[in-house]
Length: 416
Image 1: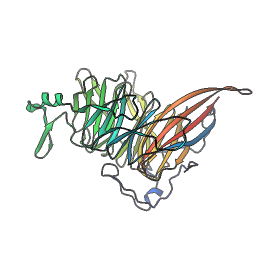
Image 2: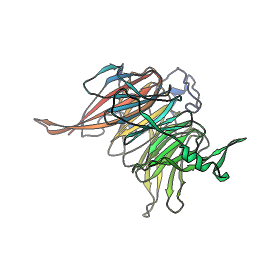
Image 3: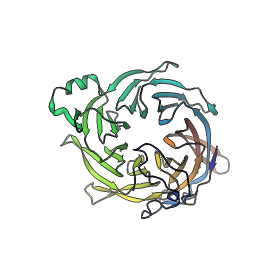
Image 4: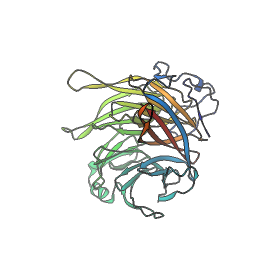
């Protein structure tokens, strides 16, 4: 295990890339990783780590490896508890303690199902999981160790299904000779997101739809049919109510619910990726969107005002390059962007005050593709005798991989 210096130019890699149909739509050749991905898009990252004069030092290390028993598909943090969802249908929990380093096997299986877990979100005292069997499950979180969580509901709920089944208007065509009520997902539920006020749950699926559920009773309120031309792999929400979806059809779409229509409608379509979009992440204020795809590039999109009536558009600023295989996951914490790739590495990027970016580190240690990321931050004040007061910002980044391991990384930035 080690941490590599950042090389911003793509390196040649002859290892073939494989994965599921929706994950890797672009085949690898011996020369593809040596070619510049999306050559028409300018690179944003600089080679200097000192693009921001306030940064004094950056330190990064892997502080723990959490042992799992199957592929890790999704991670979620709730305070000091880390949840991991796996390909065998298990959800495990680890209590993160800074005093415990190295390899750890002290996990608890808190929930089990018969289908792979594709996404996890925490909503108060509930843990919500999305599965490959087309279902969403809601679990009751409790603090009793070594006790499994109770499944409170499976979405769509029995009551919701019963109320919808009698009217023909509630049925939609899902295959040539098959219909189903619109509240059902009919393929893998790939991603989940919670609205800012926690009143709504959004689910995205490989069935090309995304659905909206009321969290008070988990009733399905809306389904956006044929939102994309292929599987939806990612969904993220901004604080001002915009929904962003990324798909295997190479497109990113932006949606908004208008009060007059009481349903979501398409606002923008972003087309620049040349292969399946696997991951999306938003800046804290929702004005910068990051997208990762099988074309090995992380594209940076930013809102730009048009006139004085509140209208705006998304402008492509450029690309963050360096990964040699598909981008599989993204996470944002303050001004850091974390990316995980099929090339088995993570990269940590930092956004500067002048919209420039630099790659702070390449984290190496996983032996198979990095499939999921989650992160948070902790701030401590330190007194400096000569320099005066300084602030150390410590970020914790957790990465899950197809090598069965979850790694916990600590990244510290000392700031004047």
